[in-house]
Image (cartoon, rainbow, N blue to C red; front, side, top):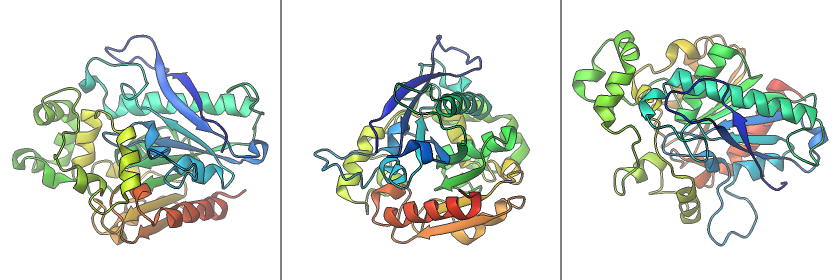
Length: 322
């Protein structure tokens, strides 16, 4: 894997309460970038920033075992990971409630388009060759997968999508009874108000002992991976996070996805029964489901990650082509 290339990309849309700036991104190139055919455009989930896709434990030996970026560049792909607006090194936003799923998806797709253009023309950084044949594959984990679905349904940008730790089932059991029983259309229409009531603060932070082990699978995950994950922890986008919990979250948008879909879930994930997930994508020409054994929500922390990386690479070559 090449050295990480960090860039700041134009969000290309007005973000209320944000100073001039942009979206932070990191790119990693394979050993022979001129032969690459795919850019894996990665969106992190809740309480995470772009470093989720490049997990490096303290005192790391350099083998990249927990790093999605290292593992997928070793298989010949370009990897790009973004910080959502207001997250990580992206331009700060004062009011987290202004970052609705639609605003975030628009900013994310604009940033992905910008980095794709620079990769294709060889203008990303000094020494990076032009890669004019690159195609974009949307990769998202958890809430980032939900945003990938929204982005794809609206903009039809990617040649395929890989959704990790996600289903349209939602996590309604975490919501108050009075709101989770509201009609779906009303919950979507009142999303900002419901998020304000639920989270109270515009920038929620993961509190120690607040269910992190269950949420990310750290109770059963490898210790070195858990240590690496701490470097990717960040604050939460409250409005997209609330939508992710709603039963049926982005089911209408998922039904519109008309490109190949890869689904990766753990058998101890938060997605509900894995066998029920593919039905949410009736328009997709192919839906491939990979259920990872003995695996919680943050897949890269578990031994099954090697299987995930291999299966995802195989899906790219079979369903998207070289």
